[in-house]
Image (cartoon, rainbow, N blue to C red):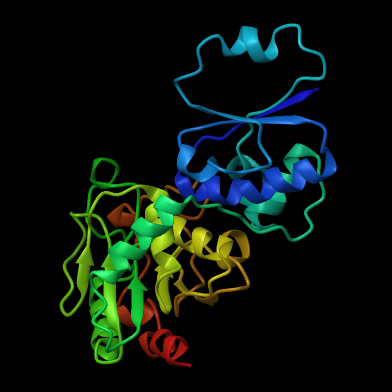
Length: 299
């Protein structure tokens, strides 16, 4: 049986999105064995579209065993972020990726499958904050790859502004038990249950299914929430839901969207890491409409 290798570099959210690409490819080529090589086994465990997973950097004898002298081998190592349709913001990330691998995008969304322990762990993490009096709200206003990869605890290009995040909490904490999912180095918020434990990604994603409402940013959690069929309110900054989002969510962009980029712009408007000198916003009012985010949760 012929083999196709998907080599996927990048973060866990990109891998969750890639499950929709692989599913679309598998439907067109059901007899091909699919191998995924990536840094995130959590995403691909129990995925029935793939035959095998290899972690990047742990691929002994891969060329000899998978590629050398094999008939019909196909390898996809291209990055969708470097394609014209993505750079010019013409197509959703998943559609661009499908174009790259030669299949027609038909609206596939990500998918995740959980084992019993991942479900139990997600439930336990949420249950510790559940007093039985108020519904549970999972709140992720800050994200990113972690402290070793970003200079500041708050990234203007991706995160909610901390002041606005606290305003949202203040408006909702009497109606919800709010779990603030974050890294240890992220800004502190009042009147939340801070959850900054380092846990498995699938257990973290499972927490989504045990909450009543979700407020997220453009992160792996918004991809996972879509994969689980769970609507969320998603606040966007320099990335846009037309490229990375899903219709299942209530997507709220910033008040000021006519952004021109900076002197350092190359293939994208802004450096996604959020370097401070590129920030185009002059006041809090340029960021999100807090009332709109609150209303989307209460409606």
